[in-house]
Structure formats: C-alpha cells, structure tokens
Image 1 (spheres, helix red, strand yellow):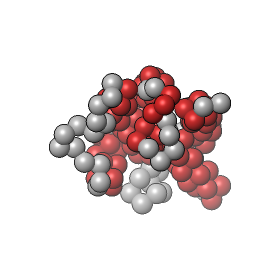
Image 2 (cartoon, rainbow, N blue to C red):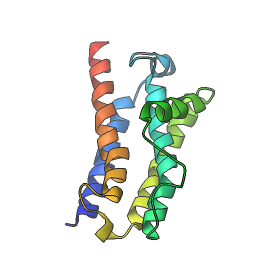
Image 3 (cartoon, one colour):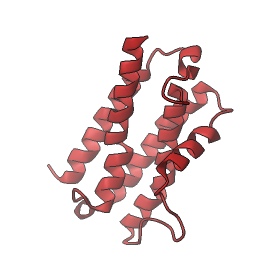
Length: 151
C-alpha cells in the first residue's frame, strides 16, 4: 500500500472516530465552553476552516506549484484557529456539522488528486494532509472523549 493510500485511509478512519466522539451532543453541550475559550462547536468550526484554507494548497501541489500563496503565513496557528472559530459563531450547530462533512469531503478530494509521489513522510503534501486530517481528528477526538468522560 502506498504512503498516500495509507494516509488517506487512516484519515477517513479517524474522521469516522471523530464524528463518533461528537455524536449525540445536544445543542447546549455543543456550546459548552470547556477547552480554554472553546466549545465542541468551535473545535468543529476550526477543523473545517483548516480544510477549506488548505484545499488550494493541495491543488497547487498537484499542479507542481508552491503550496502557500505569496504573502500568506501559517506561523501564527493560534490566530488562524481563532479566525476559523470566530467565522462560525453565528452559524447553527447543524450548519457547522454539515460544513464539517462537506469540508472533509472536499479536502479529501483535493488530497486524492495530488500525485502519489508527492506523499513522502515529512514532506509538504504529506504534512498538510496528515496534520489537517488524521492527526487533527485524533487530537481533538481525544480531547472531546476526555471531556465527555469527565462530565
């Protein structure tokens, strides 16, 4: 199995597990702030934000171009995270969950379109996909599961 196939398969598995971690949370629980200043809704919104933000990077990699647009920097991850969560404050939880599914599907389509040979552990395409799918879902799934067990 290729690195790409393994990574994308594991990303789908972790997405399913992440969705399972938030399944059954009602509106008040989805809005309950428990991770610093964030709720489960905010976590979902920021995951979708990263999906949407990095789809063009994957598309550029697929064309052999530089992944990040000129003048864009992702060094201040916290600022980006806050921007993505804030952008969805007025959205309903149902809309946020629908966007999670749509953004994940679009992100995975973009990841699938990147040539196999670009998926080398530690290299850009691999890191973008891993950090914004498999790894991201695992990180936040664990936090949500711990929160649910505690309360």
